[in-house]
Length: 464
Figure 1 (cartoon, rainbow, N blue to C red):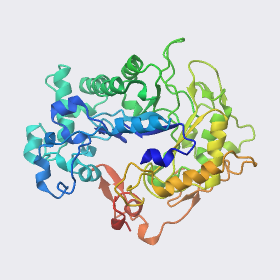
Figure 2 (figure 1 turned 120 degrees about the horizontal axis):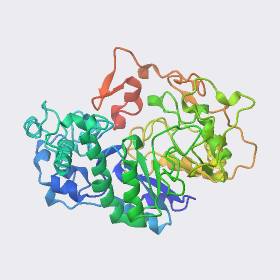
Figure 3 (figure 1 turned 120 degrees about the vertical axis):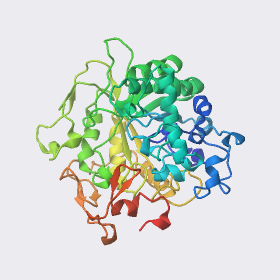
Figure 4 (figure 1 turned 180 degrees about the vertical axis):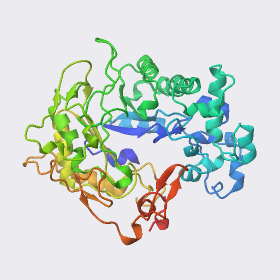
């Protein structure tokens, strides 16, 4: 279905999650180690969900081994190959221990609202099970606990303290990063080989990049690699080769913009204009670690591009990285309202690709929060697909460019955190945040009324 949607569009590659988005504890393909450890709800299964729901207590104890595994990612690779579209695998480097977001954000932790309703209810996370796994309270993620316990035993860390998994550079955390590269990742890299064109690692700061690099080059030497960590604007090679003449640690920039801060800074704001200038200032499409200005302009509290002498310059030293811009179509990474003016989107995309860089749109899927309801969640949300078609129809751009550092068709419901780059659009009265009405999403993310209106609830009927 996804292939049918894009087969007639001028798309040469897609970035699709092999892990379930930023969640390193779920994957779109079975993994033998998870099967061995009994972490059975972490991969797709051929189950009739009419019989098993989050409100059915029997779901926690059902024998999942009776159902066939489904390799969704293999199916994706097969269909993309038929239409000559390359696949870059999106991977969450925090791994099954959820090193960045913590145990409470794992799919089978009772406080993980999204996880529990999308498969976590198949795990027995009862108080007794948690206590048996060494949890100090009656709430835990069995999948995380089982993985951490196995890694500690495998790497001879005894005794071990579970909380050390989240202590920077502790022996346990070092072992978990090593296991992610050499147990989790290596299985998939070896299995799929060159059917995968590249890897984009979220939470790059939690990755053992040396081990990841070695594993990928061993089984898929031509795969390109990017890590989501480091400075954002100007684009630069945040992970250059360690020695002159050695192979590349980073092949393309991760391309993230000014953090959207829960909708404060929509992606179409002028504060992201420096990404476009970066590509246009690149050396034949490539950027390097040494760039002027060297500070990260994604955090600039005033418009740096207004200076008459402003320019971005790269020193051709060290290894190159392809200038790649990766922007969401909507307010949040995978939910919320569409925000782009078609012409601004087309202009910025055209300027990057004309400079021999790469441009990726993060679009919504059918069934996401704020999207058209439906069960075919492999499909691009229909309004997003139509917007893509309109943008491609505008290419190439032949008129003078209209959108720049002072003219962006951007509206922020809150007002930007930077104080510039996007016009302020007050929210509807029912969506205004109040200090005395907030809640914690997945146990640790503070959210307000506007999130409920637009993104926090999955069912349109539950949103205001």
